[in-house]
Image (tube, rainbow, N blue to C red):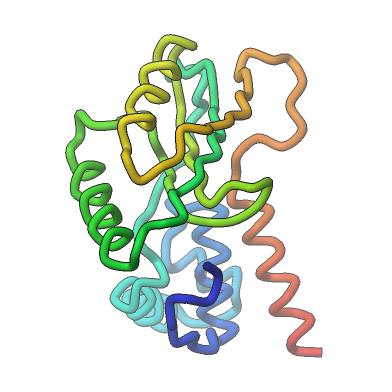
Length: 187
């Protein structure tokens, strides 16, 4: 499963990592502010950011909303298992169908990620947001319609109303980790 796709990995320069990290912390930061924080010129940041967008290193800019305030009560992490007897053509057909269906705004609107993987005896993971348990149950019904998946599905539900939070969703820690790696590489 891992390593099947052959992706050429480019060595990302420090300036590129710096720009990505700063924008992960605050996507609204101007090129001028990024340049000041990194100690480079604003045209360098603008040119490099445009290149990173064109090459797909930056796929978009987003905010991190307060999910509870938006009406979501549950974050579901659902583990699925693809049927083992599927050939490569069947897997590819399913992948294309799933991508097309997820483009439809009305289909599986609560699903924010669906990927293959491995662990705990499962080969796929779905991360979704729900307004209620009923919304989650509807999504489970949709998942069980996929004939390429085994019927055994397990979920872990996080209640956003819980008063104890250890680390809410944020790309800030990842941005800091990238900057730390960058500094270590220089030493």
